[in-house]
Image (cartoon, rainbow over all chains, first blue to last red; front, top):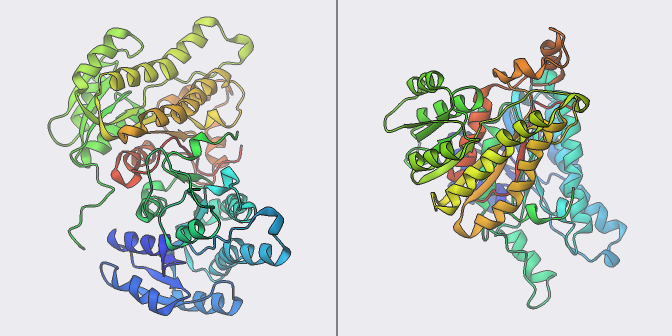
Length: 240
Length: 251
C-alpha cells in the first residue's frame, strides 16, 4: 500500500492500520524524521519510507520509480489553509489546489502510466466533510477537496472495467490531528469551536479503518462511491 | 502479526438479521456466523430459514419465524432478539411496476415490507432498550433511492424513505453511541433479481445489466462484507450515512 502524507495525522494512522492488518506499506511524506517515526510504529516487516514533496514533478517521478507495484494507494497528504473569502487571492487558491487536488491526481496518473497499480487494486482519496458543508473560511479548501469527488468518479469509470481498479473518496470530518489543531488556533475566534459531531470527537484511526475497508477485498464491488466518516455531522447538513 | 484484536472483528457480537431465509439476509447471517458473531435470524419461510441455519457456523444462534409486517411477528422477534449489538434489516420486496399500473394494494405492500416493517421493528428495539450501547443498526436501502429506473417509483421511494430516516434516527440514538446507517446496493445476484428484470421482459436484460456495471453485478457476499464493516468497531464514528455500492454504474 502506498500512503501519502504518512508523516503525521490521518496518513500516519492509515499506515499504522494497514500494517496492523498485514499490509506492506510504502510511506511517503515530506519530513524524513517524522516519516521514520511513522515507520517505527508499523507492525510487521517490509515497510519502506520514501521522502517526497508531491507538489514537485521530479519528486513524484522519483517516488513512482522507487515504489514498485501497489495493491492500493491512499492519498492523505493535504493542507487546510483556511482564509475568509474576502482574503482569498490567486496565489492562495493555486497553493491549496496544488497540494489537495493537483498532487494526488498527477501522482495517480504517473502510477497508472507506469503500471504501478495492480489489476483489482484500490485507490482512496481522503476528502473532507467540508465538501458538503462549505464551512466558514474554507471556500477554497472545500472546493479542492470537493473536486476530488468527480475526479475520482471519472477516473473509476476510465479504469474500472478494463483494470478492475476501484476509486473511492472518504469524506472525513475533523478528527484531532496537527492540521485541525492548527485550524482551531488560527481562524476560530475566542469561544468559537469546531463542530462537535453527535457521536463526539473522532480519532484519526476512525478514518484509517474506513480506508482499510475500502482497500480490502471486502469492498471489491464498491467504486465511484463516497464513504462519510463524520460522527454524524453530515446527516444534519441541508443539502440534497 | 501482533495479537492486537482487529477493530474489524464481529466475534462475540449478537446481531439480529431480518430476511435471513434468502438472498442478502441469508448471506449476511452466514458471514456473521462464520466470523464468530451470534445471529438471531428472522424469516417467513421455516424451511428456508432452517437451511440458512444449517449453513451457519458456530452455536448459540436463534431463529425467529414470522412475517415482520405483522405486530405479532414483530413482538415475537423482539423477544427472541434479547439485547443485540447490531441489527441488519434485509427483509424486502422488489416487484417493478410502472406507476400507471400500480394499485393501492401494491403500493401499500411495498411500503409495508420495505419501510414500515423495518422502522417499527427498530422502534420496538429502541423503546425496549434492546440495542446495546455502541451498537449498530443497518438498513438495506437501494441505489434505486438515488437513480431513476422506470418501474421503480414505489420501490425506490420505499428505499429512499430509509435513507432519509437514518439521518434523523442517527441523531436520536447518538447519545447512546448507537449508530444508524444504510447500505444502498445496485443489482446483486439474488433471487430478487429475477423479478427485477420482468418489466424489461427480455432474457438479455440481465446480461446487459452485467455489462453496464464496470465491476459486474454484486454478490450477496459483497453486501455481507460491508454489513460486517458497519457492525464492527472499525466504523464506530460512522452514523447517519448511506454507502452506495453499485459496481461503478453510471445509469
